[in-house]
Structure formats: C-alpha cells, structure tokens
Length: 423
Ligand code: PMP
Image (cartoon, rainbow, N blue to C red; front, side, top):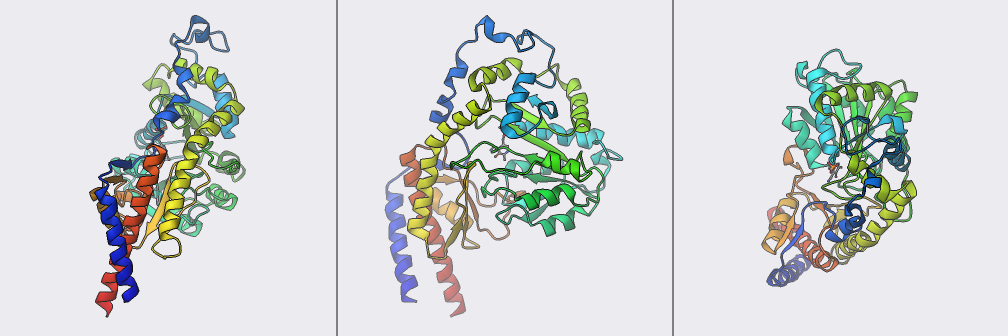
C-alpha cells in the first residue's frame, strides 16, 4: 500500500505542523459572533417614555394586557415566519424553555385530544431525526422518554421509518428542525411535510415539535420555502398535531431575544391556560424593543442579510478547506448548507471521536463526537458538527484547515488499520 503509506506520512507531517502552531480555537457551539450581536446594538439604547407604549396604547412597563404577547409583534413575526398572528404566543428569550414547558405540561396535564397525561403512559417515546440537535434529545431524555432515531435523507426524515414508528401508540412526539436543520442544513421537502401532517399516528395526542429555529437564516439569495405545517395538518384532519417554535436568538440577541409558540386554536388555548398559571405575562418591553428595531418583516429580512454578510464567508472558508483537503478522497462527506448555523460532516465510520481528540490535541475544540445522536452515542462514530459563526474569519480559516487535516489523518489511519487487519 505505498500510496496509503505516503498519504499517511504526509498527512501526519501536516498534522504535526498544524499542532506546532499552538492555536486555541473553538468551533463547538452555534453562537453568533460579537460582530453579529453588535448588529442589534441600537436595540440597547435606553427607551424613552414614548417608546414604552404599545400599539393599543397600553403602558408596556406594567403588568397585564398581553399574556399572548403584543399583537403588533405577533403580526411582525407571523409575517416573517408565515404564521397567523393569532396562532402565536410570545415568550421570553428561549424557545427551548417553551418546548420544555410543553413537554412538562403534556406529562402532567395531557394535551388536547389525549386520554390522559403523558406521564401515565407506560413507556412514552419521541422520534428523533439524526443527526439532530443535542438539546432536543437531552430535554426528552431528562423526562424519561425513549428516543427513537430515524435517518435524515437530505430532504427531511426517512418517512417510511417515521410512519412505521408513529403507528405505535407509545410514540407521543417527534423532534423536527424543518428548515436548515441543525446540523445537516437540510429543509424538509413538501412531500415529507405533507406525510408528517397526514400520517396515521397510533397516539391520538401525537405531537410534532416543529422547531423552525432557522426560518429566516438564509446563506444565499434564496429564502428557502417550507410547506406550512399548520395548514397541512388542518387539511389532513389533524389540526392539533403541530407545536411550532421559533425565536430571535440568532436574529437579534442570543441571550435576550423573543421566543414564540404557534399552533392550532385548541393548542393555543391549552398553552395559554397553563402559561396563565405560570406568569402574569412575558417581557413586553423586550417585545417592543424588537418592534422598534426590526419594524416589519422586510426590516427583519434586511437585518438577516447583514448577518449573512458576516457569516457567509466563514461557511465558505470551512467548505473551501474541506474541499481542498478532502475532495475526491472518499474520506468524508459534508453538507453545503443554504442556511442555518452548521456544517455536518460524516467522516470515515469509526473515526469521529478520533478526529475530535486529534483536533483537541492541536488546540481546536469541536462538538463532542456523538452529540448529534440520542444519548450522545453515534453508532457509526462518523458524524461531526462544525459551528463556524462565532470565531473570527481568520480563526475559522485556520481551524477548518486543521479539522480537515484531522479528518484526513483519522480516515487514513483507519484505512491503514483495516488494510493491515485484512492483509
Ligand atoms: N432550536 C434549535 C434547532 C437550535 O439550534 C437552537 C440553538 N442552538 C435552539 C433551538 C435554541 O433556541 P433558543 O435560544 O430560542 O432557546
């Protein structure tokens, strides 16, 4: 195997060279960079008295008026996300917290259409498209759900597998990041959305947890459309099937945005009945700040264009490094996302943990291998999630080069090992 030996020796030398640079880079989490956060600095200017009055003439500094969230802000987000304003409930800064509330309330109280609270089911389960978002899986795991992985296809989940699993009455829910999915970047096809809306579910209270976290986070000129899950579930006679979520965490300020829940009239009434016990209302001043700053849906899209100007080159840098080092080698496959926050790489099976360890030793922190799978365990040990938004462009360029070297080295080592064990 002279070629393999030569490749391995060369790649090892490149790796040692990279390590010797003594870099310290972090590509672990999909966080906006300080420059992206600064795009929203105008929102932090003190609000004068004039600015605390809602469209209805109410004083947003006080209690009351809008458990569902200010109508003008619901209308703005509704237009941007393709949702009717009265289907939306605004929350505080975290959509994950709203997902948590829905799960806890479903467990303790049950949801519309259900015969009993989910906690009374013997062994409730969630369908988990993989690779997926680790915090979704962790949340369901926290409350004892069985997690059932199904593969993503590039156009949404493998729907034959989903339909087979959903027929089981113990399957209560499914995680979906339908647009620019975390981490694969794919958007569910119209056919996949239609089948999710129409499929027969064994549980009468089955819910899609439809997390459109990256709805407006385009990386190209195209605003990738997504079929309306609320329309399609209603048309299929399953109007209460979808709980939709979103937030401005990666639109304005990740730590201080506005989150939203959206669903059918019955689910909105159910949600508000629970929410009214939990809070007198969410942060209306922050909702107003968003209104003043973004103004309307087009203002929001223009703002997202400025994000794209900052992060687009970082995605390009990672893709270029992967192509340069790994293109045509068969040592990796990777996504070329048109939106969202991640690049998903499938390395040679059995090497993802090795890649993460090699990168760590060379000063590059990556998301732990397996994080994109339920239980943090990727049976193939192949998937890596790259998050290029936070570091500076020069750092992303350096890190991407190093990561590509680590992927190549781990893959060649594996090939070498396999060749040795079969020769
Ligand atoms: N959903 C997905 C798919 C995400 O990737 C993230 C952030 N990484 C979140 C939700 C978190 O959203 P929030 O800040 O609104 O809780």
